[in-house]
Image 1 (tube, helix red, strand yellow):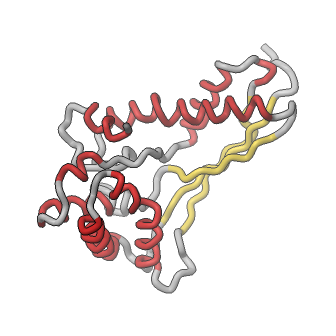
Image 2 (cartoon, one colour; image 1 turned 90 degrees about the horizontal axis):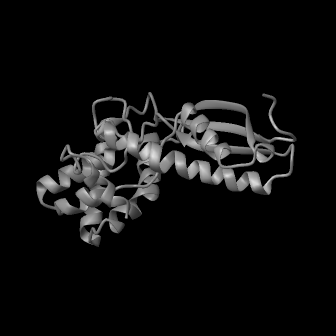
Length: 216
């Protein structure tokens, strides 16, 4: 039950974020999530892939990374558009407050050091001869939907297609979900400048399975 993580903070902040990378999420909760969930899950993934790879084989992994304008809007002091939309709906009575306090999306936007930490975790559990080495790691900044004729609206639709289901999972009725979606569109129009666009970051990394034990 990922929503239980919101209760692990002592800051009474469960209605200020839906994703732990938001600037409004408590720092201690974000760090606990990074160490105990995000890095551990990536380490498990890498350990399993290491068992499948032949010696010398390489693995390319790409992932959405930090920062991303969807979660950290250009105004760095603001919550994400979805949190803001849900807070407004709670305020105007179109959404029950418990939907927001229970809602959390179980993904984490990583930084390069998170990849290295997870790899170390994975290798600690593997035989040295079966361990992985990091061959290359790069970050790329992109503009999301930059070829669109209506970049803000199209990004709102993309954002909702990714995250909208979690509003239902948190217990929202269909009427409440429609209210949040309607408010989210307005927040997107307020938060992003179509001339600047909406930016995201990706990490690409290449791992190689060792052909021998590392030299000491």
